[in-house]
Length: 116
Image 1: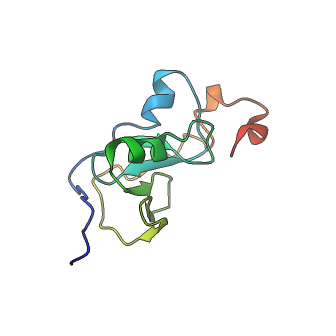
Image 2: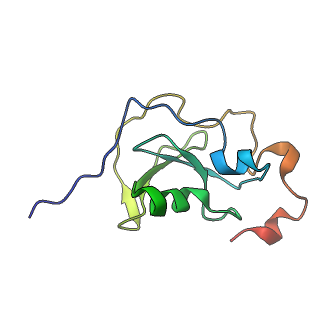
C-alpha cells in the first residue's frame, strides 16, 4: 500500500499574524505554527493553550510549518517527525516586529513559569 501524502495547500495564506484562538480571547503564545493544509495559525506546544496541536487533533491536518521569522521547517504531528515541505504562500512568518513570546502587550511577566 502506498504511503498517504498529507494535504498541503501552497496557495492558501495564513489565517493572521498570531494564534487565531489566543487572539480571540486575548491570550498569548510562545511561538507560532502554521497549518500547511488550511493556513490556520496556532500557538506551539510550549505555549499554555497549545492551539496548533489542538487544530491537528480537531481537523486531522498533520503538517505545520514554523511561523517564526527565519524558520522554514515543517513538523508532522502524525509521525512526530520533521517533514520536508514546499514553500507556502506569503507571508511565511508573523511580522518581524512582533516578539516571541507575543503579543507584546499580553505576555505575563512570569511567562517562563507558565510554559510547557
